[in-house]
Length: 377
Image 1 (cartoon, rainbow, N blue to C red):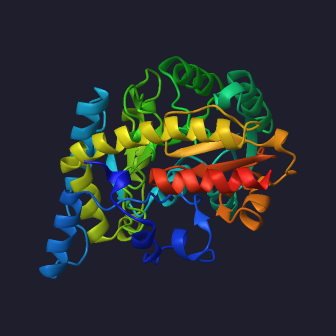
Image 2: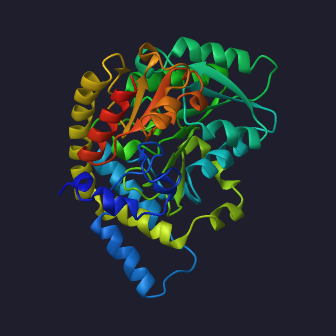
């Protein structure tokens, strides 16, 4: 089984999702976080049967939460994902905003590490929260000194501070270590900061992932999880808001209307992914590992001045192109001259001269894309 080797460029060009329709047909799209895979067979079977049966109503029950709890126990040796402390939400970003709303008020500050997933900024601004940036350190890893300084600055006026942590970090593909997360927990306790964690990419970590809520001292935090990234289910909306034991009372204040957001088909697909998608996920891990090796070789050959930390935690590569002479936004040149779409580093903040490249595609497409990008320089 090779999920990333099953589809041809012709197959993919028939897709109507944003990845394949945003740009002209001659552009190779390595940008938004959609992988070029078919659905895992158990998911395809479950969704197809639901459609055949007309089972397309509203979601019900705790099957998704139970499936995730079992997955976390098996894969991460973590038994703290209690379904009784888990709420179904429309998607991870919706859940993040709802969790932040449970522990802070409009106008309060939220600390984020930059560079980071750009929708963090838009959703937080829409929720009327002040954004305070804490820059990541070398290799895109957490810088606890920078984080502490941000906490001190954010709480200067006595307001409630929330920290929105991305684990694994998008775009740097870093999976934070137990020691780093313990440092975060200690700082949060010292400064009275509530922590909300986006762990949507967690299942993509082949081994050694550390859930934030598994670390001592994190019981009053929240985690958002989903099968979206690992099983390519962005179009099937459903996610889980998981509360630590100390955040149970906060979770109980979550409005019932939040549960109206997820789709039944999404709930079914995500439940099946966590319950039956393990073999497919293992095969995907192997294909992504091979693509990381290939990408390193292609960068060395075609973009020898580019630097990549080779983070193992996602299908995204955060590439420093500042030595290539392509200006502050190399994505423009790669698109206009190379006909390859990658994400500009600028919306991630602290991303001048960087691009984010999605290597969750076939080796053939990845190879052609890097050859095109090399011709730009």
